[in-house]
Length: 333
Image 1 (cartoon, rainbow, N blue to C red):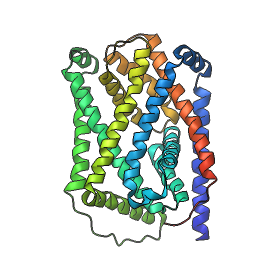
Image 2 (tube, rainbow, N blue to C red):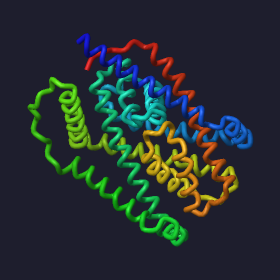
Image 3 (cartoon, helix red, strand yellow):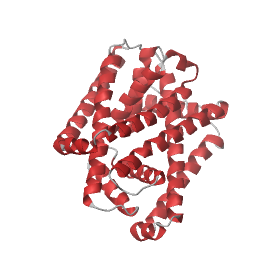
Image 4 (cartoon, rainbow, N blue to C red):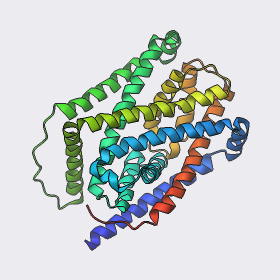
């Protein structure tokens, strides 16, 4: 037990070092003067952008909360919002991406007398519903784009790649649902769990089985979480819409959804890069051009304002962490 505790502390130490280093790199590479200038020009409109992201994060919190089952009585929504925000922030600025962020959520929630295993289960289930809802919205947005008056511009700009991406993501959705609905649970693996690799394999298998069981036995709750994540992504995409609208561009809310979902897909390629520095900016430029919004100034303004929002929520996440860290941890599974 002593060796296990020491190993756990070492892993947490490495994880914390990576997170802080990634945040330091992000801050060092951010043009704070340009961010401040852009915020000043946006004025009180930036409050609307922050409120939009707050509303989106709230729906995301609810989507996770329903997956906690009976354990949701042990933590209120404000506390869960704080935990989720810390985890999402770490996921954004850590080389381990969402894996590190989700593990941190499960670890922090043990401070509310929720066993680590229950926390991990709820995080895994909510991550599946988040991915499925995100893929659904992305495919809807792309289908609208292909059928819209922008079709010729999109095809000439992206070529057959846009069809390939849609087919691949549709296949991912089909495979996930096939795994959830059709495939049988594998028989128990009797392989040795004496090694670290064996234990990790057994825990991952147990987690996957829990997700399948949840879908089959608590189907309504699974779809509640899915619908709440649909709201999470939809409301979150309004950030793009409002930024462009405040900058004087002629846009519709569907443009915000197309841009947000597409940027998220492209950012996933560079998920290991702290804050997806450079990746997000390139994605913004490419996708704004694809929907007919051109000009260096508007592209830079959009990128800077989205970075400003990230920095503000990064600061809020750090404050949340300081408060939650004071609560005693409960070491049990």
